[in-house]
Image (cartoon, rainbow, N blue to C red; front, side, top):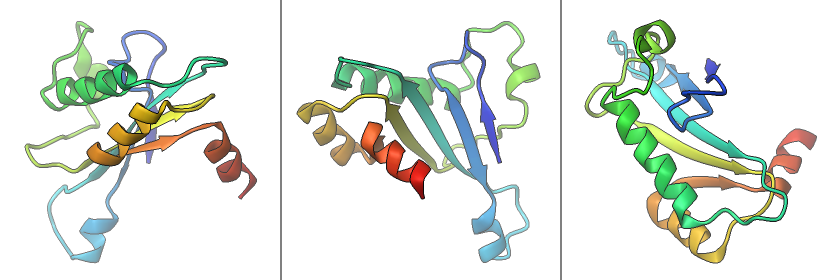
Length: 125
């Protein structure tokens, strides 16, 4: 299950995916979901740096707190039910590569970095 955000007012999040497989695994009757939020950048000669990753983290926090830059967010984001401890995994996709400091930040913050080579491998599979 996924959702591609609009080009404008996307809250800094380009796609949202969720799964309820944990709910099935543990036979839970709640509306438990497990989310993946992603940002995609089509850089050609610009490395992803830590500022890009900071922006993604800030976007996730704003989204979790339902702070949006659109007037009627419930029309767009009504399917997403984030609770206080809803797990969210962050993915940053780039058409180029990550700087060394960005790779370190991804490792330390559990952000999944996907560069052009990773994306090509995924597409081939």
